[in-house]
Image (cartoon, rainbow, N blue to C red; front, side):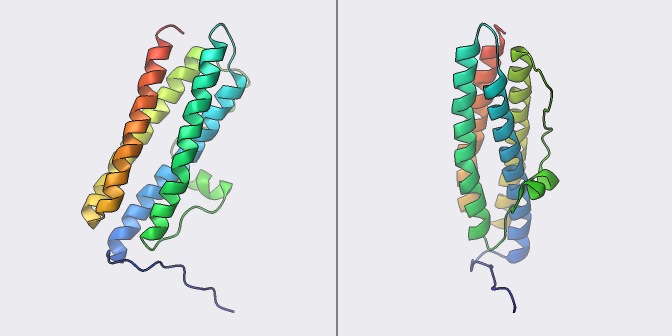
Length: 163
């Protein structure tokens, strides 16, 4: 039995959309890694700013998770396939996991800020690939995701000033 073709019809050139899909799959993998790290820190934060950080990390994790479906669907709309498993995520992610037993609140804020800024870099690279491919829909939606990541980095920076 042959597998059904998953290639969604598109007017974009397949070679061009492949590079966009690869960039978006990297962003997707990093988004899942950042989501899980943010939730990890949400669950394990402690100290005098517990409530503020706990709530901020939860809000940020929710925002990150909300983008994952949009990213994956954008890959599919361009006729490509996306990530399929935790293993697939780990093979594509560039952000480093944090499995430490204890992370200070200040280190949590700094690490999440740096990871969000790395995500911004990956988003800018994905936008450049979309521009090269003539994929204006991907170009436009990436601007929103970039703005959200920049805002998260800003909030983490400001919160870290008192950590």
